[in-house]
Length: 417
Image (cartoon, rainbow, N blue to C red; front, top):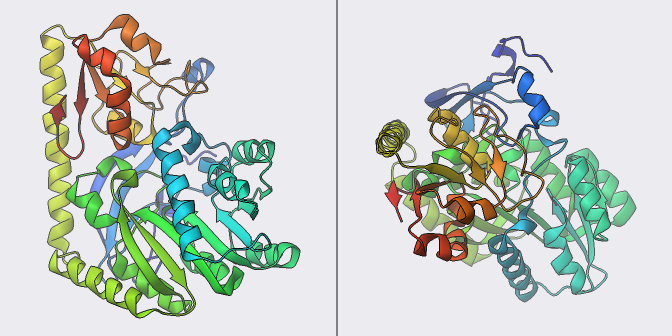
């Protein structure tokens, strides 16, 4: 699709939850390519499309959301984020399934639906337990991978209309999961209406999503990119849940994706859930997430981090140090483009995922190689572009560090390890 530099028709006109037109823009990361749009060598000859990447907050319900919405078909037709490549995510999914089994009396006849099922990784854990599972995901390549694993799935976006089709063919679901899916959804009302329809009266909807107070506290600006349309605190989300008669029965903080919330949502309320919800809402109020100064302060800290990182890298290059990147990730591409880091600064990137190797980063065109190259070349520094897997990566690269290699980590604060 050619946008011809006319982005006004993709501009958000009103809040996607409360419909307010009072949207305050507080951070711009500039013009940015699609962060998961890794390029083959033949693509480097072509002009790359770039789109505005800026964030606003609704002054009425305080939902944080992108100012421009790129058509989903551009981003999700062939999607390159696959959780099964990370030991951290495999453990996370296994723990989630165990948690659900403890809280629910499931039989082999109960239907479990995973919205945004990706390559079917989460559902494979349920299937091993003999459960009836169904995935729904818009990505063609990932739906095919899931089918090859034996996971039945629907290659569509989840909507109320798709929920109706699922009900007719499979029945309603006792368990619905959506792990880091809600941020990708433009029409949240349609989404939650579909969830409410699909869920049995005694069923549980488990939703996980990055939590705005954690994102702000840890300065996780690089998780802001085109496919993440919304960034949730609990206040705006509760408005949405109340609208569709859904109640929070339990909520907990989890470390995945830099700090997320996991909600257990049902059609009947529990006193425990009400108390927990009130405590979280009170904490958000106490920490000023209803005031614009919080969002202005976050923007200032992001700009300061950019200056500090660029200054550090320039100094290292002046001293003749070799710097590479580690982890060809979407958030890494946001960082590279926001800080204008190309091969003049970052010579190449290493990544463990084979289908990214041999490609180039969008916008900055840094080549991607296998992890083996890190220890073969022994560059002085590796800029960690997948900080959400920092512990896993640092354990994995003990030999590189023992030989003198060092990692530059930007989140939650700039440091060298």
